[in-house]
Image (cartoon, rainbow, N blue to C red; front, side, top):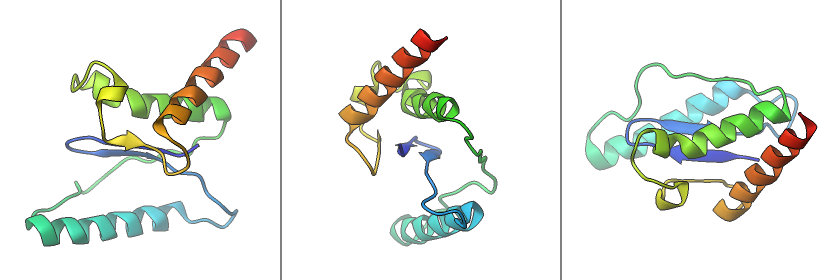
Length: 114
């Protein structure tokens, strides 16, 4: 399950490698370079801060927790009262509703198992 959330000053991204030799650092570098090029062309401003954070999610539970964290980020920033009110999050692999259903089901399964 992939997810993203564009915040006013940063981006959260959950991406899944499609093959064993995928290069996470190269993916991030190319994505940032491409986005920065078009942003600077349109605004004459820098897009990215110099450093960022990355994390490898090793289990389904970690991924569920991080996808939830990503989607709830606008709530913690007090930008909206509901994730559905924030237009800048979603997934390239499913609809927003499917992503929320995935989280509800996964969280319910974790509660039953734990």
